[in-house]
Image (cartoon, rainbow, N blue to C red; front, top):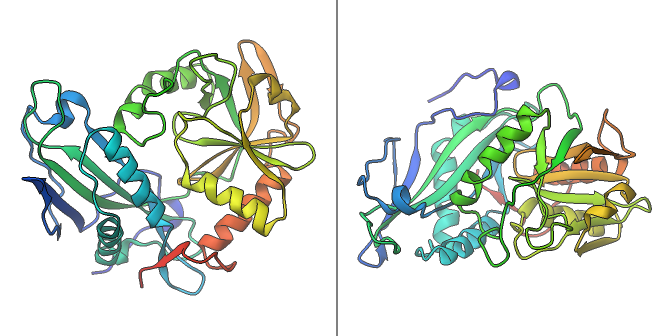
Length: 340
């Protein structure tokens, strides 16, 4: 099969592909799993996922490298994070090697949907798991389904990278000792009202503070923060309620080992924001989204990097990590999983 997309103009949305992977958990055991063309899911009206939001997910991308290989980036870390997420919601862990195998099988089966090198597009992969059997009392489900689907997506930024404007949010993203450190669907559901409100007020994203003291920077609804000091130190917030972003961890390694920059993971206070030279949001979709302005209840904080382009250090981080992902720069051992 061959597919014909206008790759350069592909949007960032769902496009149905031919195959997806499915495995079911029943009687305390995962079945052997398989690929299927059926994109519909039939579950009980009383399924655990519908009643008590028992679901976790991951996101990663497959892409074509400069030398023509199809690869994925650090899927082992996605597998580890999904295991941690499942444990926190009392769900059975999907084994790490099986997770990676499911990703490989899904990419191989949908290889025609992997965009060509240089198009700016990628094949986005969504592994997820949910409680599937009836649960009416508040308790974990007994049966689960693990799935992986793929969808080709265009560049996250249309028309180039433009620095974002953030709003210091009055809503809380996560509670101390809560679920902010795992990738659970419920975390994203509770952020929807806040992001819609932010967009309505003219902001691109929210900056969430720690809910205990509301003095420390945590993350946005779907990305970690990365800051650059005026002496080029790369700083990221440290908190037990922040999702451990794979992109953030990779950027910190790149900063230190490839660019020779000093890095620090520590508590970042809101009062420090005016002292940073650059700010970015990091995640799978865009790698780094630069931030130009932050609004804090009428106070405007303008980053010296400005509102026209990425800051100098942020751009180096972006170029180096995407260069590693696309095969232009040698990767650390184990970072790139070659599919074909």
